[in-house]
Image (cartoon, rainbow over all chains, first blue to last red; front, top):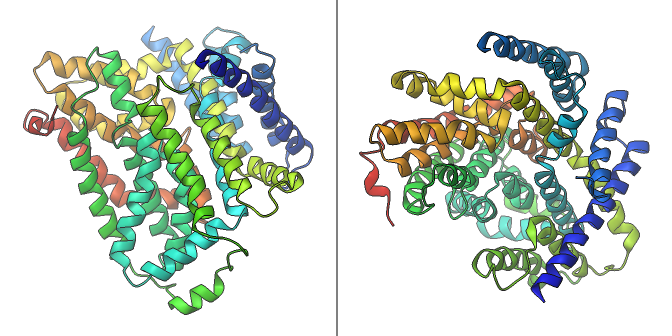
Length: 58
Length: 433
């Protein structure tokens, strides 16, 4: 039972990473603060980290 | 080899300074520094090293995100305002008791999780609000919150620096409770006195403050105020003391569960659009920190690959003993600023071996070092806890003025750590098994 729950939690973390990637993507295109090009780049590589986690590469 | 690595280190420092100055973004400056370091070190464009590095502190970033979502949802329900009102009503005229209680409140989350940042996320906002209403200046509020966040991270049962050093040096993580708690009490008392004796120019009377504070929403009661924190405490304690009877939750999921419980305490609990809005705002608020931990991971990975990280450690531990004592207050915090918890492994463990070989008590030494490393959580390049404190308190001055504001209690904590490092055998009576 514990093993099954651990597995569910393991996959839940992927879902969580995906959800945060969506929030970041929304903020990349529509945000109130830090609007410059520099932060476009910062947002991009931070989103990339979350996407890599979701697709299980890292 | 030394010369080549030293040149790389100098170029990396210069790049970081230049990029920070021109781009005004510490996050991208760290990534640019990492790329330049790799190019100079002969690694070409380091895609693999960058991506690997960015995942180093990914879990820490997840904790920041979920903890902030929890506390923002909790605030959105109105429970935070109700709690602040109650604290002001009960303790406004008893300043010292209030400061002691706020200090204890700050220490609990960090002591249970090993991260001072969690303390700031979970209760930092509440503590800052109460202290602001009591009339303390932002400088003193920032110093209080930063110092107690550091003490929370050092406090047993979870002291990550001591645990990492103990694991690396093949020594058991036992006997640390008293040797950590005694200095923590001394530093905490100093910080409370330092804060409490300061002037409170913005102090207003209690009735005026209560009229300014928003009224709690209809139906708010103690059950709704306490339940989310009670669930958090229970989940953390169960994870620690009944680890083999429950699945591995991890702190991010623990905070998500607490966020859900908080939302359920609200009258409009199924208003998904409202909660989604809170989460979008939270992401915007936490983003600089998230980007910092991801960028610093990439930088540290390149520092490792080029040998700069090793160069720093070797330079320090091959110094004569007297110079180690003299420079410890400089090297240990800056190592923490650059390597985060990696400082305990890179610098801490060689020092443990060195001190052990000359017959000094290693438990006191590890405890002493665990007081010196967290001092660097406000130093570049990462500045994680420092920046978090600035954001939580709403400190409006420059970052340099924040460092000046925390200087006195910071130096006191450093002096205590240094004394423990210099006299480990004289303090071995504090090691109680």
